[in-house]
Amino acid sequence: MSSVRRLSLVSDEVHASMPLQQAGALRVAIATQDMKNLNAHFGSAKRFAVYDVTREEWQLVEAVAFDDVSNESGRHRSEGDDRITPKVEALKGCHLLFCLAIGGPSAAKVISAKIHPIKVPQPQSIQEVLLRTQTMLRKAPPPWLRKVLAEAGVAQKKRPFEDEDFK
Image (cartoon, rainbow, N blue to C red; front, side):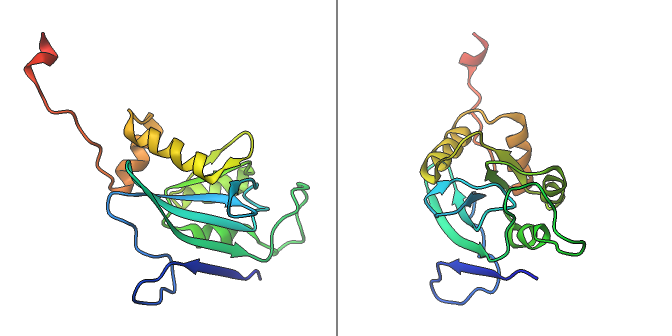
């Protein structure tokens, strides 16, 4: 059994589970080894930095740490040794998951928890990931992100109807 530790910013009460989502925000989890960069595979990530991201700002919600992680060798441990389910459970409530890689069975579990996994080809700073997420939110989001936003209850800004549209 793996232990999960949560570090979250607290204002006036202690939270046993993930803090409430900021209104109109997309909750994003980033696989990290150092809390500075997206630099981990899903299974081997020692930590996940969780942020609420809007078009204008982002805010660190919490850091989730794990003691028992894979070694990225691709080999599975003995039957009954499940390191993935505790990670998926800890990230429930997130809308997007950024990581360097994620295996098929892990991706299936993440998707069934209504979290959209996004593989990034090479390490980059967490700030770069958050800026790119904001850019996607500000511009016309791709169809997959519109679906995630709709499920998250994040309303898209619509252009006002104007007569010039038909000239």
